[in-house]
Image (cartoon, rainbow, N blue to C red):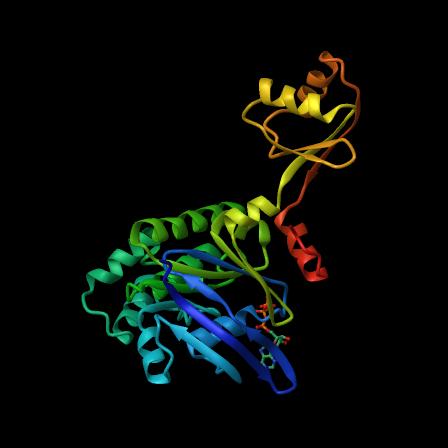
Length: 307
Ligand SMILES: Nc1ncnc2c1ncn2[C@@H]1O[C@H](COP(=O)(O)OP(=O)(O)OP(=O)(O)O)[C@@H](O)[C@H]1O
């Protein structure tokens, strides 16, 4: 049975007259990498700050590791690592000293932890470098090391890939996958870079204007963001039989108007038209349709239902 480390129920947050979050009920399964997707101002940071206890909700309930009372929530947060807003990186201090400062501040025993985290996050080589001289990517890594220093079971990262160059993004993504796979850490991260989240997360939550429009697993999303080929053919029954015989691994369904739809086609469109022509069938049309995560999100915001 799935166990959820984060569960919010009908959580709302207003800043004066601005309703930043509107009845958000969201669940993060233990062991997952959850991507919170939303445009600028959608409420992502506010949601993550609520989890961190930096701001409080005006309505609703938050559960962290099954706890919901304020005192217990504070205890739960000690099992969490946060990278929300830039952590205080003292410009004149070395990366190692800064991490050591946070280790002591968090009461984590053993100087060896600092070394371990510097190595784990890939900035060991830069440990003597002053923070002001670190690149953006190195600062992000140090930020992650700070979030990781208490060996949390759950990481909450707000736009962690912001400002990283393409290779930095790839490296950071690999690092997150490693932390998830090898250390079993659950990760909740936000981003407005959809294509990147698509490669990182296994579950998605779409936030728009403070409302959670949908939660969906990567599997279901892949199904809905489908890549398919619509083939209009003179005789669908015969063509279906040909597909079964010659291309048995293709998944297809027969639609109205003499159309056969192939999901995730494995061949180039010409292969299908050739199959039809060689067997005396007349091809009336062939159309490839693809929907990206971007398309999906845009349609979701417009209220378009996906089936
Ligand atoms: N401290 C604050 N005081 C007043 N309004 C705020 C405050 N913080 C956020 N807001 C408003 O709440 C809404 C949600 O903001 P939030 O920062 O949570 O969005 P976001 O999805 O993280 O956006 P971005 O991607 O731009 O960081 C916005 O309309 C914003 O202007």
